[in-house]
Amino acid sequence: MLAVVVTFAFSCKNDAKAEVKTVEHTNTNEAVAKLDPNATYAKAEFTIEGMTCAIGCAATIEKRIAKMEGVKSSKVDFDKKLAMVEYDEAKVSPESLTKTVTSVADLYSVKDMKKVDAFSSEEGVVK
Image 1: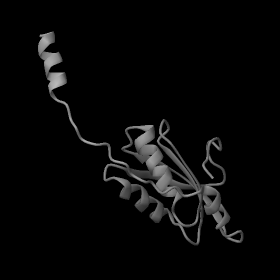
Image 2 (image 1 turned 60 degrees about the vertical axis):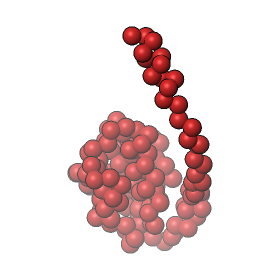
Image 3 (image 1 turned 30 degrees about the vertical axis):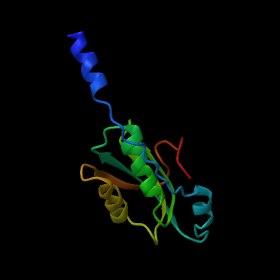
C-alpha cells in the first residue's frame, strides 16, 4: 500500500512554472489625505453572513470596502461576523456598502445594517 502511495506521489510531477503577478497596493495614508475634511461622516455596523475564513473572506471584504470613495475606515471582524465602516454620507450609502459586500461573492449577505455613534469595538479599525 505504501509503495502505491509513494509511486503515485512521485509520478504526478507537474512542471508548471510559477506565475508571477503584480498586485497594485493603495496606500491608505493617501486615501485618508484625499478625504473631505468638511464632510459629514457616519458610522455603520452590520453583520456579514457567508464568510468562511478570516484571511480570504473577511480581509477581502474589508479591503474592498476600504477602497470605496468616501470611506474613511473599515474593519471586518470574522469571529463576530461584524463590519464597522466610517464613511462620507454624501458619497457612500448603506445600499452602496451592501452592494460592495455582495459583489465580492454571491455567498455573502448583509444583515442588521445600522448607524451608530461609536463602534462596538474601536480596536483595530483600519484607517
